[in-house]
Length: 367
Ligand code: XIL
Image (cartoon, rainbow, N blue to C red; front, side):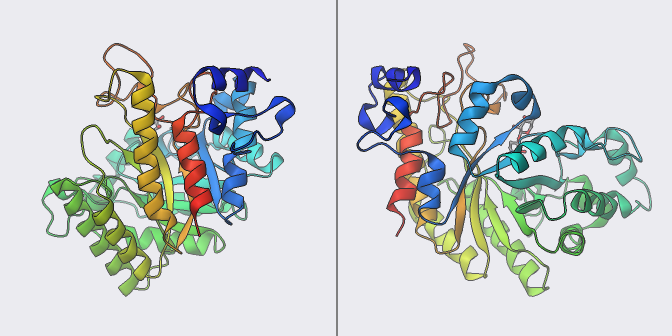
């Protein structure tokens, strides 16, 4: 038995979490998430960082074994690429792109336009009386040209709605992009991206569209309104990215409402993809086996809804191992005692957890 499979066995996951010695498949075990996805013509991948490529070989071996697509967790945001005016620095995101190319992984681009993580000089520029449209389109042209032909899909606009901000259609009006260019910034961004890289799929992405709360319901309404408006204006959008940051211990997953929402998105002629799946386990049971089981169960229920859709393209988790999860440091979701969040498929030692099995079985169950 390999060290990984021995530990999986010891942790009581049974055959579902096992790889037999020599890497052959144990009975009932999935060979890899990528194999389960590919058997259904789908993608499975994870968000990674260049520091992991440079420093963590075992982790990257797991990424290579499990994923057929990767996405930059951080390095392709405006702050890292454009820390200085007038320069585009793709040094770090290029490392992820080079890993993808040499390991035959598809690559997602995250993200061209976001209200968050913009350098101060851009935020200041957008506040000018006549903000320069190149702040929006110049960057899209540059980034799409740099990666032309190498990107499976671009997250063109990320998180453009926030019903709590009071706009009648639920748009995120405090976004510096909205404040500079009005609601049309979204249309402009998609048109620029299509012109700069005609082969990439173009995504609009949003979080909190799967839970029962009134706020999630308002977000679903706002997202549908936005997507309908974009389609009615022939804006070149191909897909909706369901981020999938699940928070089952603060907000119940609502299968019925989520399924209706997915159907409506699909009805607009858009593809769907789960682009940032993870599960905030803060406020879950202290007992780790119980908590892991509940994380697995909500993952399965959530993915089953997306797998039922013919528009489904695949799943990316926001990280692969608990060793690297933004949830462990994000103020709202980190554990106060400093323990790691357990919201990703592999634990910090790269051992498969029930969430791994849930993803694999959701792929396997797709018709
Ligand atoms: C997070 C990254 O995980 C962090 O490393 C970074 O510091 C902040 O952003 N929704 C998104 C992602 O679209 O870009 C966010 O990623 C997580 C929430």
